[in-house]
Image (cartoon, rainbow, N blue to C red):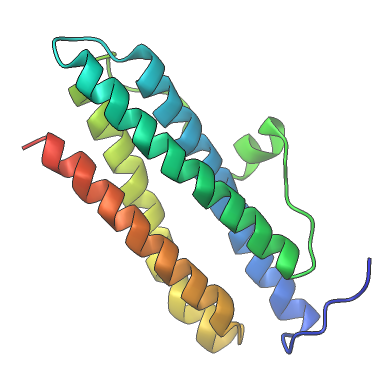
Length: 158
């Protein structure tokens, strides 16, 4: 592979992609859990929630691709196996609730909020400590999209 020369030291780039590896794994696990909700939700509001979860996993699919492409733009290969995602993620793939829409909404909301908190913790670290304003900006934009998705989930629980 040709060395990436974009003004970030190799040491800092490696630190950045390590954070992105975990984010990619978290996104993939959340995507899978959202697909599960789409497939397995039950109840009187089945169709509405089935459609809602489909919209959400569609958005997450885009996020996954964006994170993977950010890793590649920094000159690294992405983890791309279920085994690697499960070893990297901070989320659990286990669902703690029943197949009701409320159970899925709570579980997915918790995961989005967990991802948001971790991204918020890394924004300044990326820009100030690792000298990667691009990834800091990328994470900020992605965090805002997760905040909107979390708001939608939260609104269904009111």
